[in-house]
Image (cartoon, rainbow, N blue to C red; front, side):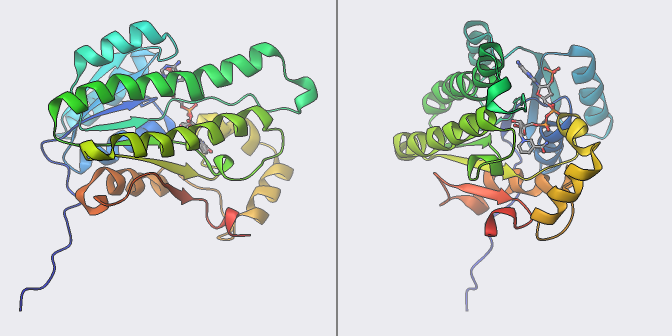
Length: 254
Ligand SMILES: NC(=O)c1ccc[n+]([C@@H]2O[C@H](COP(=O)([O-])OP(=O)(O)OC[C@H]3O[C@@H](n4cnc5c(N)ncnc54)[C@H](OP(=O)(O)O)[C@@H]3O)[C@@H](O)[C@H]2O)c1
């Protein structure tokens, strides 16, 4: 009897672009893809952090290079990404939060969050997509959204608006590019210990509240999100598109 074989979780021979790859979740995603066999191109603004990560990946025997890039400078980013492509995998991850009550939010706060989390993410996806379609091999676009793209959060009116927007973009794009065998999904973490959450996680009261909402009772580590990127990038997820993979320890379960 021929038993069904699990499709491969390996990514050998594939090229991946990871934005926001110099630290935090993007660093985790880049390492995960490299460890699964992909060639990774790391993008962020700080070249010193990027080159340190890149050197460490190469020293461990992985295939990595980096691109110093501000993805919110859309025209430049688009040209550089198109030149560096084609890519088989995009982790569209660079993001920011300006927490606070709506009454305290300024236009500058609003624009900064929306410019990076929505506008830049949109045009990074577009830049990679053009190359993917031309190459004709299909591909996987993974947008780092958040559990805050599925529920509201305290002090997060702008951030939630941006991540709900990313969820909408993901679904609409999945409809558009399915015929090219390009899959588009989001990874939606709960609170993960990174520089991004350092201030929130320094407040014991806030930590107690977060841990009370996470059914598994603990804040996430970078390692908790790494497998999701490999899975969504791989053939093991070949019929998965237009959806979200929540890594929220059960926060949104109720
Ligand atoms: N940590 C969490 O709890 C959590 C939970 C849910 C979702 N997320 C999402 O996960 C993503 C990453 O979060 P994180 O916690 O890893 O954040 P982080 O530790 O602050 O890292 C952000 C990364 O993005 C890069 N970046 C920022 N602005 C950029 C720009 N304009 N152009 C290019 N790169 C830029 C940063 O490098 P440079 O500063 O050098 O550019 C850095 O590599 C975000 O989209 C965030 O919304 C985080």
